[in-house]
Image: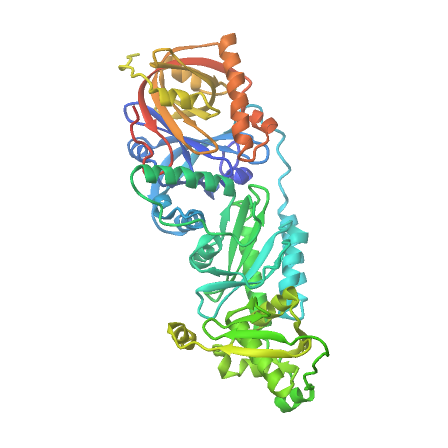
Length: 468
Length: 159
């Protein structure tokens, strides 16, 4: 145990950067300096790490005189705490540095700040004294660890009772809402090449999230995925204001910020956000994105919880996706053919005009964009079979083995792709439906007749298409 | 205490200090241990060479003792909505109880500050939580002025 009057563990909510923390140092000649820090990060019971980005005077002062002081603020009560610090050393690699860098890079990427916001190092300091400023408010009852564990237990149990992949994605997002109050969430899955993430489902949004795509390495979600770190942005308004200030500063020097602000997939007025990478055996399998209309909802105080949730989700989803819920193999095509029926034209309705563009596997129905990429290719294959042979029943197995779909061997993502496709079709209400009729079985429903048009490409996009 | 030559604040800086800026001040003791306090109600002397502030003086704070012993002070003024910031460094010439004028100026500044932080999501009533029950008035001559806006320009000498 440390002998700090206010244990650092008890003020972790202050150490997440919702409210800027002033830091004071002092030069050898006795001149004080006071500036604001981006992040004061909890390291352990006795140490904190300070983000070092811009402040050169602080750097020089700490080298000459290790004594410093920082004030941190509880975002809920606005209670100030003062920490006397003794500078120990600067780290430019390692877990503390990487965690902080992922957070700052995510904000920089999200807001298009680029290099101007780069983390140069973390200054690790020993906390020699901690105290509440002014009359300390009644200490909030520390949340017993049991409670968090009970909720995690509930989460794990709910997810583990799910019979299949679809169910698990839905139940997991709902459970995050019920148990932890994370009421806006999007689940994304990494594509086969691992350079993009696509949303398979969301909770708490008016519009369906399925199908939205994010590039790995871009924005809050992309950086979390790329660095394999939980990224928490406790105060998006502060990040945006910071961006404006940095831009002004850069432009005054005749420079220009390289990036643009990247649209977030969720709430227009999100105040805080977190992105949790889903990692399985060292491989990125997806990401969980959470946001809130309240600042400070995510930060150091729940980062560990998010890491556990992400770890469990990655494992659970991978197991469900890998389980071959394939229909019995007894002559799959024959079994499928049993579900065949003549495409019946409904009298008086115009046929659905379905157009498929090879260039990006996009599918349009009656001129409206529906879906693209692998789900687009799958839909095109199903519609083709339906048109040619009147089939309506299909199996996951035949899709997995269909070379023309270009799924990678193993095809762990087929479930996720089918889920995106089904949700896109549900949301579009375009007259085409796809539903599960049992383990590993699908049924295609087309209202009336469909008129299929394939638009080939011979240009460079074709090459990209084929390299997949 | 020796007083370095004062400079005169640029009118742009004076106008900036009159806005709803957040103010933090730092002093230090004989061991060069710095001490932070929040500050309110800035006033710039007619000739632009001295600034008066009301400094929070909560129980246990070392600010007053530091100022009485060595006078060294730095204060950073930062606008919560834009992150523009300016830091002044100088030497205290007077430390004492605030006058009614000081307190009136402090109340006006607090109101402007509350308007500012309301725009970044802190309800005005809650912003009052930052106020200290006890304040002391400090006047210091300004020896150095720095741009404290985050970015590559941070720390550049102004004026």
